[in-house]
Figure 1 (tube, one colour):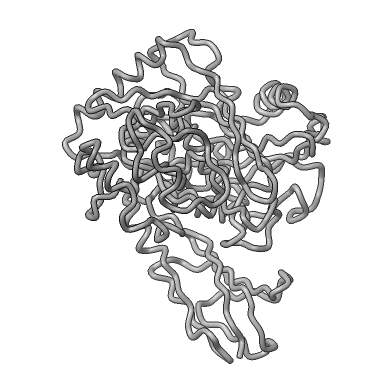
Figure 2 (cartoon, rainbow, N blue to C red):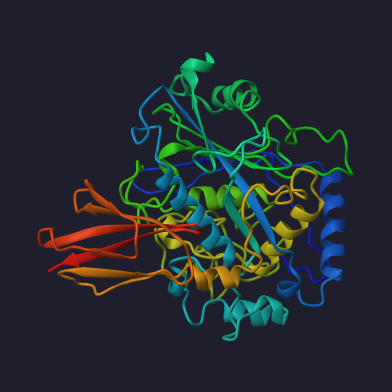
Length: 455
C-alpha cells in the first residue's frame, strides 16, 4: 500500500461477509465503505497515536478481551453438531492468542528473506522490521480469554460459553436462510438483540449452522467512534460482534475431535474476523492494487487463495511496485488457506491499538474482572509451552507443565474415541495397546494437543 510516514488512515469494514469454499477455509468478503467523515476522524486518531509513541511495539497498551461464544443449537447433546464442545472453543482461543501475539504455530514458515526489498524500498522504520530486515511479524499485545462470568455477574459453568437452544427461544432454524441478506437480517433482528452481552465488556461471537446454499462463513462488525454520532450503518449495542459458521471454529491440529468443515480448519476464520473487529482491512484494499492504509503491507492485485509459495505474484502492482517480493499472502487479512497464514504487521497493530483506545465499544474491554489477564504476552508465550516425555513410551509418561496448573489430561485413540482421563502430570500408558494416541492437556491457561506413541 502507499507509504504513509505519519498519517495512517483507518478504513473500517462495516460488514464483512466471509466464505468457506471447496475443501479449505478460503474467504471471500464484501465491504461497505464508511463515510468520509469517519475516515477523516480516524486518520486524526491514528496520527495522534503514532505521534505519541517513541517505540510503537514497546508502548503498545496491553489488553485482554473477554470472549463469549453464543453456541446456537436445536437441543443436541454437547459434542453433537452444532452444539460443539468446550475443548473445540478452547482451541480457538489458543489460536487467537498465538496469532495476535505474533507467535502463530506456523510462524517458522516465514521465509528468511521475505519482503526485505519492500522494507528497504519503502524506507520502513526500524519498528516495522525484524533483525533480518524483513517486515516484522507484529505482537498486537492483545490477548483473548474465555469470560468467567455471565452478563449478570454469575460464574459460568463453562467459561466463555452461552449455549442457546433456538427452539426454546422460538427462533427460526438458521439453515432456513439461503441468502446473505436474509441471514444477516436473521442475525441482526432476532439472534443478536435477544442474546447479546454488554458490548463494552465482552466480544460476542455467535456460532450457528447455516444453509448449504449460503457460502457465508463469517461476519464482523467494526469499531464505531464516539466522536461521530449519527454515522449510518455502524454497529450498535444490540448488534456489535462476530458471527462464524460453526464448522470454521477451532483448530483441527489442536483438537482433532471437533466438528470441522475440513482438516484444514485451524481457527483462522475467526482470526480474520477479529482483525475486522479491531479495524483491519483486507490486504489487497478491496481493489486491484488497492490501499489497506498500512505502509508495511505490499500492494496486492486481488485476494489470494490456496497455499501460495513466496515470492508470489511479484510485480503484480506497480504504484508502488511490489517487485521482487510480491504479495503478502501469508497475512491473516488475505484469503489464503488457514495453514498458509501466520502474520500481522506493525501498521496493522497500530490500527488495532487505535481502535481499542478510541471506540466506545472497545476501550472498556478487559476492565471488568471477567477473566484472568496476562500482563505480558511474551511471558504467556513462554509459560504456555508444555511437553511430554518420554515419547514413544511403554509405561509412565510425565507432562512438564511449565508453571501452569493442570486441570486434566484426556487420552483418545487414533479414531477419536475417548479412552480415559488423568488428573496428575504423571500417568501411565501401560494398559494401552501399541499404537499412537492423542493426549489433550487442559490447564488454567491453555489446552494443548499432542500425539504420543505407545511402544
